[in-house]
Length: 152
Length: 152
Image 1: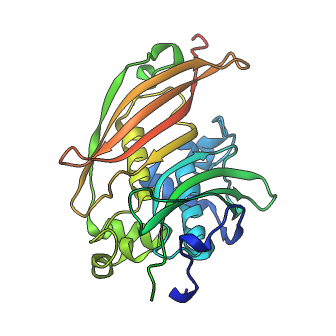
Image 2 (image 1 turned 45 degrees about the vertical axis):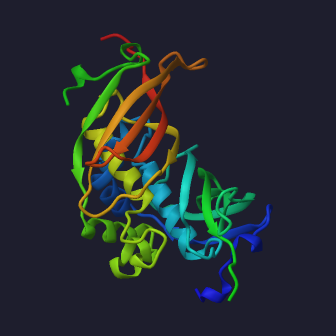
């Protein structure tokens, strides 16, 4: 995206909403991610997953978080300086499944200038990642560092 | 790990500590992860990263979280039923860098039986991911679902 269209702290207001593009998730992606980072049978083996709590192959929550980040970077709120998270919290009310199409729906819930650094501030967003049935698979809040406009 | 050596809710106590094995992170891994899930120049391009806030290539926080999960699954607390997170919070006090060796140091901070489901409960862990200089790159708390022993 053109740098001129990116947002600085003072361009951002509580209540601003945004919706990202979507991401198609399949079984091969779920298994490949899990083999690398979350090697548990309910994430890596569709047959074994049937006997698990999930009653079928389920995507790792960390994979959901990673896909959410990709959607936010590519088509979320276009922050000057990029998406730089300081802290985050996550809830996973239901797992992702092979064949899901995920979209992120976000809202700005807090904007605060830094007390000690006049060149920056903090923007807190709340983002729901939803599947194709509009069911929430992840609720995510993140505190992001955002630069202030310093003049041309 | 042998299922007989896995822990049920009543085997777990507040204050229990554990340390995982370690994970060697290199530039190729940082760039490959970021191209897939966090495509921002300070994570994907060592040259561009020099001019960024990070002053050099930095690993994505989601990559740190993913590596932490892998270490916890492979050599963390051996929970019966696996590591099933319901919610988590994360802070990234400093980035990872190419050449880092990461290790996770964990502690059980809460154990609670479910009020509604006699077959399970919740274990909350706090885990610090540290680099080879013992600097903390991530502080992570997670609420995990853990089964109760139902008899042989």
